[in-house]
Amino acid sequence: MEKLMRIFGAAILATSLLVTNAFAATTLPAGKPAGVKKAQMMNNNMLLIIGGIGLAGLGIGLAASGSGGGPTTVTTATISTSSNTP
Image 1 (cartoon, rainbow, N blue to C red):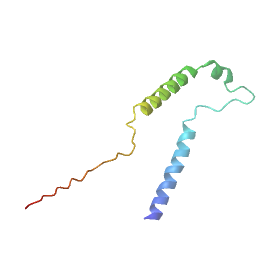
Image 2: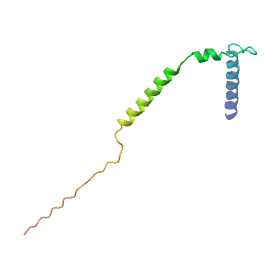
Image 3: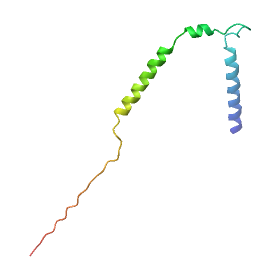
Image 4: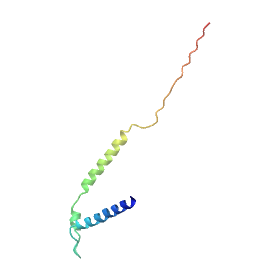
């Protein structure tokens, strides 16, 4: 059974490596820039900032609304009654 799983895992790994290379668009031309200017012009920082603020707010909200989680103490009292019968 273990040998079958190893063969299956190796086949899946080999297939994934081949498929990722097959779906690669094109290779970069030699001596030319790799689109650095275009990548720098695309400013996606706003989405990261909004997401960070949202996660911070979520964390603060969860921390503030916590139920305390401390130990609860239970007190019990014993009542003794004595009767004096003549």
